[in-house]
Image (cartoon, rainbow, N blue to C red; front, side, top):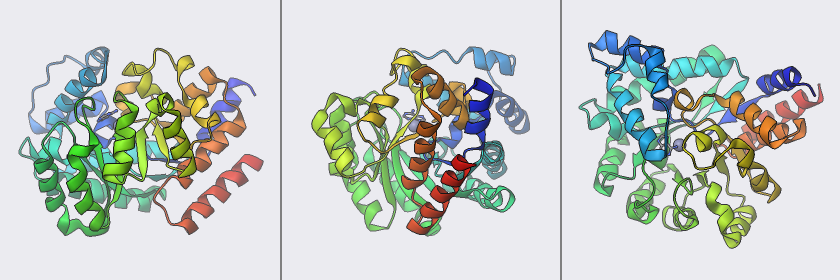
Length: 338
Ligand code: ADE
Ligand code: ZN
């Protein structure tokens, strides 16, 4: 298959995105527009200058700029615009379902109310379903480098929203912040019906993946690429069909791997794991969902069948009902046949 053919095939392939930070979709142009609207000074001359600053050495060097960028998000409309812009892009990539993260504490710590961020995001997700047919399940992520008490307060703030917030996640600086610190918060969250997921095994060791499963009851592991260092853990993840939400371009930009050609995606697939491909923070890492499928395909020699398997996995690993999953997977197979 020639490259343009593969691009068209991947673009039209029905798929879901399960590892996406809404704050990580803040394109420099929108950053400037929101800064102007809210009267917030930016330490950059232009959108180009912002992009030029995106040269990361590790997760923390990225997080520093990612959190700084969030300063322009102030009003409910800002969160709406951010989320709606992402969905509009995804509509052009045959994305049918998204399970995005947002980081409430990043905003409440700046004096932006939990409701301001949440209402704007939820309104955009509802409009996105109406306008593009993209369904969603919103996941609020706790910042693991803040105390567990802060996560617990966030869980309380979410109470009035009920099931409109579907899941809880755990992100930010991983090393030195093991999942066990959040066991009590996750126990309450699970009891209240939230689907538990957690970032683990991005920069942190395989023991953090085991901890996310055992201490947090995580039903999906975000990243998880370092599981390959522990064969018994891989066997467990395969046996229990625990999904991994893998983010190839992110892993290169944050130097989790040296090059895309050295990325473990294919090894994870060959091990029989339920692997999905995702973009993480696309405005910062140089590519949205289809770019991640294509870059991985090119560098790891993935076939059209491999891309179909990844798209099917994206629905299987989602929090859609079994009926909805089956319908979307049938749509993928139909597309692949045509
Ligand atoms: N927050 C946004 N992107 C993240 C990532 N890749 N890892 C941890 N925290 C994050
Ligand atoms: Zn992430």
